[in-house]
Length: 288
Image (tube, rainbow, N blue to C red; front, side, top):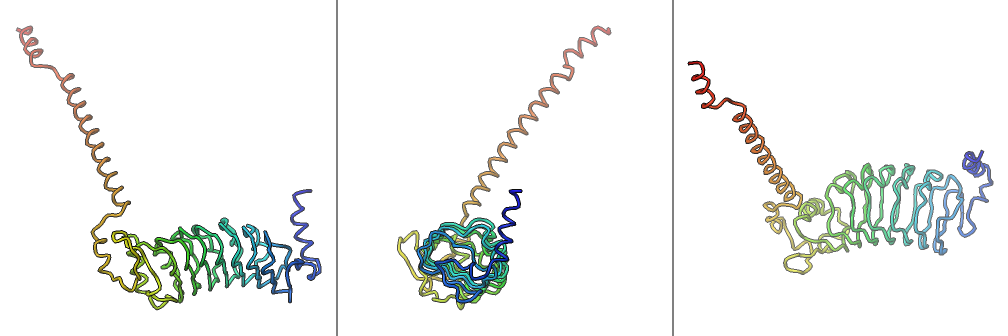
C-alpha cells in the first residue's frame, strides 16, 4: 500500500552501505562528521548517515530546516547552520533534537522566536542567534533549556526583551546583547535591572551595549545609566494598565446605567400594580 512507502524508504536507508549515505557535495571524513560548508546549497542535502553527530552546513543558501530533519537525525550533537537564508523556524523543527548540545543559527534572516521553539533541545549548552533580524523573542522561547550556558542575541533588531526569557535560563554563564537598537524606555527598565544584576555574564560588558533615549533622541551606553534613570517608570502606567483602567471605567458605567434602569423599571411596575389612594376612597364610599 502507498501508506507504507515512507516506512519502506526509511528501512532502505537503514540497510544502505554507509558510504552511499554521504551526499556527493559533502565531505564525510567519518560516519559521524559531515562537512557541507560553502557549496551554494539551496536546501539541506540528503541522505546523511543516520548516526551523524556533527553537521557543518554553514555558508550556503538554505532557506529552511526540514520539519522532520531531527526525526531522522536525532543523534546530532553539533549543528552549524551559520550564514544561510533561514527566515523562520517552523513549530516542531527541533522536536526530536534531544541530544543537541551546540546550535549555531547566526548570520541568517530570522525575525522572531516563538514560544517553546527549542524546548525539546534540553541538553543545549550553546545557542548562537547573533546577526539575524530578530525583532521579537517570546518570553517562553528558551523554555526547558535548563543546561544552556551561552546565549548570543547580538546584532539583531531587538528594541526590548521580556526579562522572563532570560530568567528561564538557570545555567546561563555568557550572554551577548550588544548591537541591538535597544530603546531605554519604561519597557526596558526590567531588562536593565537584570543586566545590572548579571553584568558578569555579558561577554562585551555594559560599555558595549547602547540604547536610545526617546526624549533626548540620542544613543547612550548602558554603563552611563543607573536605576535612577528609570525612577519615573515606577509611577507610570503601562499600555496594559491604561486599557484595564479604561475598560473598568466603561464596565462600571454600563453596570450603573443598567442598575438604574432596572430600579426605575421596578419602581414603575410597583406604582402601576399598587392600588392608588383614590381607588381606596372609592371602595370606602361604596361600602358606606
